[in-house]
Length: 162
Image 1: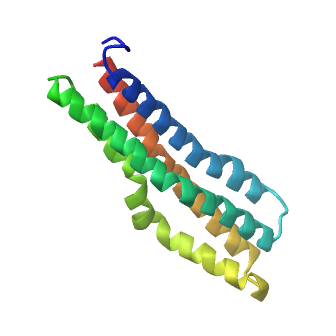
Image 2: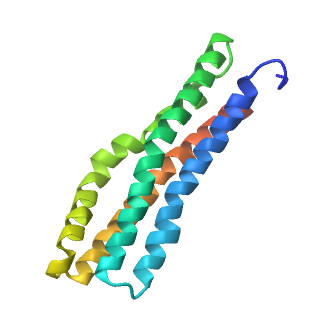
């Protein structure tokens, strides 16, 4: 299909790039913020503050980005189906990308609440080992969550190659 004959290839490509970006952004927080933070000699207060800043940034960007990427994948999926083309990979990509939201509520929410509570108690002597263990758990769960849009990217690429 020619790029000039339809917006479909551009939309499919943009969706794939965007879901790969979302995966990288989520993984980056775990790999390039939390991991070095846990390797540092930062105080409990600094660790919790850095986590809160990174978490708030992700919370403000990622759900709306996931919704937009999902909508784009659904458009491509629907258009492919209407034209009798393979569409399932794009539908799977949409579900996986949007999956970051329920994943958060099902698997990460308790850890988030725990870390936010520690941030409020920081002045009252929260044990450093507890903070580090909880940040480590959050980092691992966040890294797992970031795999969802990456798997979506793979499903969409499979669909393009089909």
